Amino acid sequence: MHNNVLILDFGSQYTQLIARRVRELNIYCEIHPYNKIPTDLSGFKAVILSGSPFSVRAEDAPHPDLSKIRKQLPVLAVCYGAQYLAHFNGGKVEASEIREYGRANLSVIKDDEALFADITENSQVWMSHSDTIKELPENGVRLASTPDVLNAAYRIDGEDTYAIQFHPEVYHSTDGKQLLENFLVNIAKVEQEWTPEAFVDMTVADLKKQIGDDKVVLGLSGGVDSTVAAVLLHKAIGKNLYCIFVNNGLLRKNEFESVLDQYKHMGLNVKGVDASARFLDALAGISDPEGKRKAIGKTFIDVFDDEAHCIKDVKYLAQGTIYPDVIESVSVNGPSVTIKSHHNVGGLPAYMKLKVVEPLRMLFKDEVRRVGAELEIDKELLGRHPFPGPGLAIRILGDITPEKVRILQEVDAIFVNGLKEWELYDKVWQAGAILLPVNSVGVMGDERTYEKVVALRAVESTDGMTADWVNLPYDFLQKTSNTIINRVKGVNRVVYDISSKPPATIEWE
Image (tube, rainbow, N blue to C red; front, top):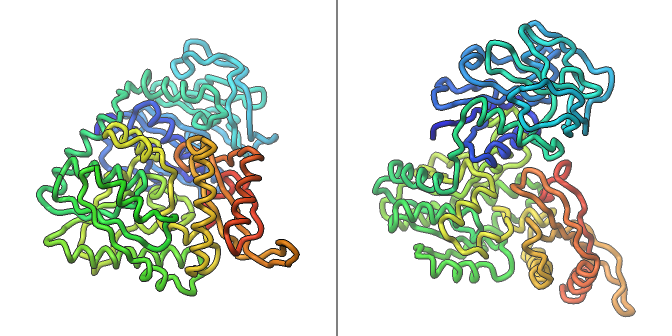
């Protein structure tokens, strides 16, 4: 891939949003930690420096050597990046006298500046910093101000280096996409060639080169990611792809049979393996969320190791890992805290002699769907809600038992089927039910009950990095609650989760 954009991550919560906005411009980008700058920069045409939770005035502030980047490539420094360039190049950064967080408006924009082409004064921007630039760096030229921030944007004379103290990547910056386009397309001259068609052609060619005539085993889940990965691999290596769909006992109600039926007409070589008892045995007595994920991950690998031995000379294990999985699980993509581990991220144990191939590793969820459409995969399958790899295990808070799985499968089926009947399913990015580790008092007829509580969760999102709860109709929630309590033995109370991400995550564990 040529014409790449390098995003140096200083640990900001918004770094992934920068990547999302760049990809929306049909431009490929990669996130690398600030302390692991690629040695070969020949494939990059521009660099973006992210924000950071650090202060440039702190002793432990990130301080990378940018000598091989500045004056060699166009640079856009965002928030911390802007303060970094000022602080270490003759400018002055001090603690802000007022709170600089939230919406602001550009009150002054310097005329005829390429970075602000087609952006007018009073444009709304999003601020998020406690330090502010009091004096510009050497050769700095002020480009924009807000009523409270004098040096909201500047450039460095004599080089294609630009800096802004606001965040163009968040939706609250109304002209943020325009600013990024001005920098990347008009200033850096990056070609907008990152399209689903280009990705398919490039990936199929790379897979052919990487795999050759070797055999690949792939775990199908029935979801978008693994299905798109399977069709890409099938396009590249044909009959040498062996797909396995494992019933881990934690799927949705009747999902094992329905998924196998779904794949019958796709031309894929699929084998169903019922390992539900094996997974439930491995989970017995484990309540810790990470403990459950690791137990599922180990069992998942063990099952695949057994099945791989049934395929002569198989060399690769393919996985539908996507970019958010990597970002949230592996800190090498930035100095950020691991939120949760994923069973399909982080490599394989030494005893399993399969190499890993992950054709979707650098894609966000919405990009996976666009690639699936390019591959002419059925729209209903591409529109299916994401479902966690560990399945219902992380929607059952506490330990896992067959009875708890039964209860949650029934509740989930009522909720999801209800969304479809009310034509709400396609308006929701992800929905599911959570079985809480508490009982509540209830009354049914003349009898007192002391039974389980379930929470319903429905969110709107683009790629899962951020999410807002969905304001479902009260009539729908009322009917769903009544149906669950009347039909699912063991449940006497239903609640609805109205938390957004951040600060909450989409899943509860």
